[in-house]
Figure 1: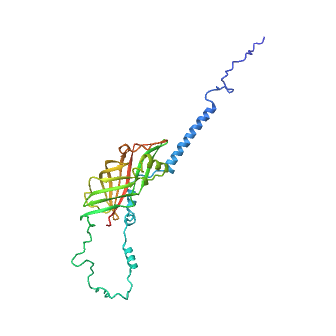
Figure 2 (figure 1 turned 45 degrees about the vertical axis):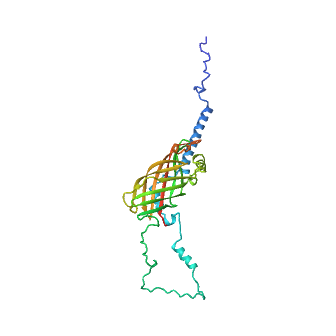
Figure 3 (figure 1 turned 90 degrees about the vertical axis):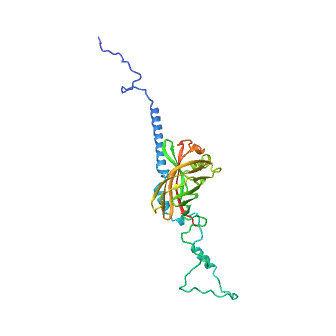
Length: 312
């Protein structure tokens, strides 16, 4: 009698030939998930490279920018020019008088070498060398903004999940300040807003269009409304830390602002470094956010202004 059990054992239909279980997550789904993760990583890495290396925003304006601006010679940076002494000499050479046989006037004789030279009319005294320009009281000086100046905006933004900043700059600025003794009594600057440029033309189009509406509001202005007391006379190369209060007009809306600034007299020029916080809704400015880019609801108006003495 055969006692060997020939019964076929039960086979688990979910078991694999090596004893494991079949089923679970299909292989194609795993590869799909890995592919999606890989693509996201590549995109995020590309954004990081773009933000930090290719499209790295400019650093905030600081004292190094003030140093650089003041190192530019005032005559080269001045916005208002005039005829120089060399020009006058050249013009004089062109107008040299030639001999005229019909001219019977006596020839002019050179003054004796020991005679004192004087160009003042008889009965008048020549003005002192430090006389202020006509119409300006003594002790008052006028200063004009030069082309070495720079102004722009800085707004923190998130570009597809990566923190960065939008920065735009221009040197299309005009204005002046008045100093009376140790006080700045008047100051104003005007900016051509449409000339502000960033490192992205698409951003600039948005800025000039729906954000700042430069066709309707082409300029931004600041006007000092309270004197700035410097305390002491300026010392060459020394920084003066102070605050300024005035009216800032952006996109046709004017608000009173108070902000800190650093001023310095150097190389015959006055440099001013500062920034003004701007809350967009205070000036009816649309939030710059759009698809893929989110910005804060505020920004900075930062500037380095260089003033040269009025030559009038």
